[in-house]
Amino acid sequence: MEHLTLQDVTVPRIGLGTWALRGRQCTETVLTALDMGYRHLDTAQMYGNEAEIGTALSDTGISREDIFLTTKILESNLRRDSVLRSVEDSLRQLRTEYVDLLLIHWPSRSVPIPETIRAMNALQENGKVKHIGVSNFSVSQTREAQEASEAPLFTNQVEYHPMENREALRRFCREHEMMLTAYSPLAKGRVNRNRTLKEIGSRHGKSAAQAALRWLIRQSNVVAIPKAASRDHLMENLDLFDFELSDEEIREINALGS
Ligand code: NAP
Image 1 (cartoon, protein in one colour):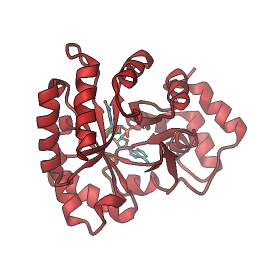
Image 2 (cartoon, rainbow, N blue to C red; image 1 turned 60 degrees about the vertical axis):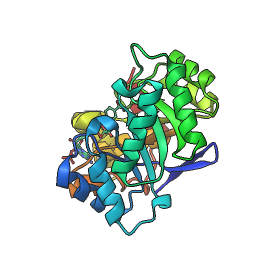
Image 3 (spheres, rainbow, N blue to C red; image 1 turned 90 degrees about the vertical axis):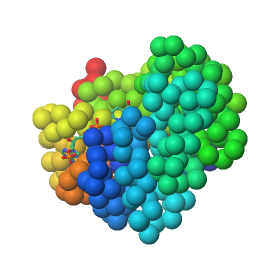
Image 4 (tube, rainbow, N blue to C red; image 1 turned 135 degrees about the vertical axis):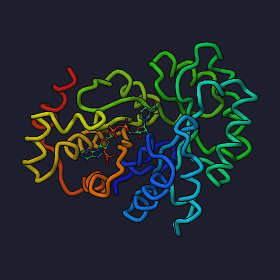
């Protein structure tokens, strides 16, 4: 596994997305992924699977401090009191004392960004949250969150894959020493139908999905969180660290998003 280090924090370049994993299947998939070497998990209050992930965290033999765990605050929980209450509930469900990363899931239409960010800072101060960030924020919303925060923002999690151009946001994040977390990095499976990605993948004995993930995580401040339920997909998405894309291949993939 390759890692990214920013703000003295080290994060595995590939995490497991867990949206749509539910019930026993969620716990089993997370346990399988941890066995295979995944050490970075992405959930959210909205996914309704924090308790199932908590079961996996308590059943695995892997130490909590070796796992990078992210959750996100539901849009209806962004008032100060709801942030504090709902994150306590998330921690109970996840069966952990802290999360590594807490994000605002979506910008609120009614709650000012500083109100939510300061509540998140309070959770950082009492050790329940190590780092904070945002998701689905534009550059200007990210800047506003950053200005309101007493601690540096760690990431903006947005949809990002070869067909989605995120250059402006990625540059902003890099200039502010922030990570960009690529969600739906396989375009929900669509990357596999892309001829360019298929051809590039096959030149390296890899799939289109692997070419897309390699392209994402070669970028200095990017990590990706593909969701996979099947064992083959889980394995494939970790099998990325024995090949490099050429400059020409990178240019070809860059062109898919323009
Ligand atoms: P995704 O990861 O782009 O795609 C998941 C789909 O691709 C699943 O159908 C999966 O199939 C398939 N797949 C996985 N690995 C594959 C491979 N190697 N080859 C072919 N197909 C493969 O989509 P996503 O679930 O939307 O995004 C990933 C994660 O990002 C989510 O689970 C969630 O944690 C996060 N997310 C965050 C937000 C946000 O607002 N912050 C929004 C959306 C998603 P199987 O499941 O059958 O293996």
